[in-house]
Image (cartoon, rainbow, N blue to C red):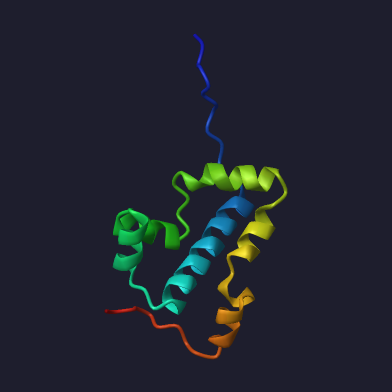
Length: 105
């Protein structure tokens, strides 16, 4: 019996899972630095609030494929660093301010 295009599912590599968590944290920080609520971002992105929550919590869902490809290309650390808001002028300027736990509008 042939399986067209299907591969056995393997466990997610630790670096991929860690990258998902870090990217989620960076996205949360960006949202808060910009003063946006989860509802505003999910609405603008055309995704549910639950999907945004899962992404911000580093749950991979379908993103693991993307992250595994990036890892395979040797670019995972670069991607994670590129999304770090504290590597930007805005993030550094606001680094001394505590990010709010929740942004309400």
